[in-house]
Image (tube, rainbow, N blue to C red; front, side):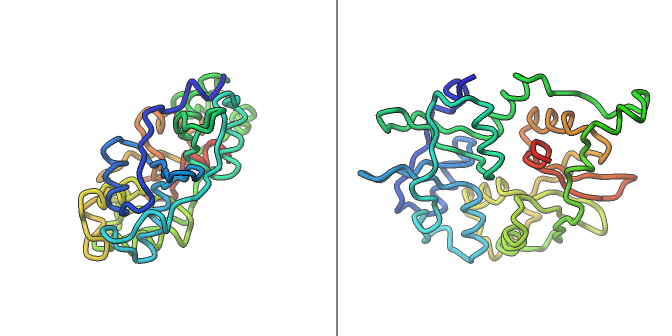
Length: 264
């Protein structure tokens, strides 16, 4: 399967001089996690939610700071004819979540997201599973199945409801993760992700005065460490999640990402 069948051809573009807020607005308007940055005579660049996170962590003002200072210039690109499995290996191996796809004449054909790519690859090779692992299958078979507990990060970033967005971004960048759990009185109150921060910036919220409690995803879907990796991936793709809190006996024991499930 060629990636030409998987790319989003409705390219969201922006000039490098535009502000972080304008980039966030464009991403929010189109429901995407990146914008292609075009400058005449230059190879295309890309600005992503992770770049915005980095900017916020560094104290950038979304209204006055330009994306040129934080974008990836001369972004890595793929041809439309590249095989989906090869693209998945490259994206997962190097941590790309979005790649620009370029035609032979150097025009931009579209953008490939890791979510769309993984969905197609899993369908192609039949690795999607459903439901929790069953003890009825026997210990020997069960022991060979990769589960959420094998892939999760047990040392979770936990924030209070009053933590401001810039501090949340700093914590996430220090750990190189795209999400943090928001706790209230010892309980999971929500999850805040790069996507939540992007929407907050798009809505004009001020990072250094806005608490995560105002923009987090409340009462997030959770998963157990015993859920199979395939079932967890299917759940995440079906609902558009990139991270899920992992709970056992009512306690938070970790967080798992889509990338960790696919590569762990």
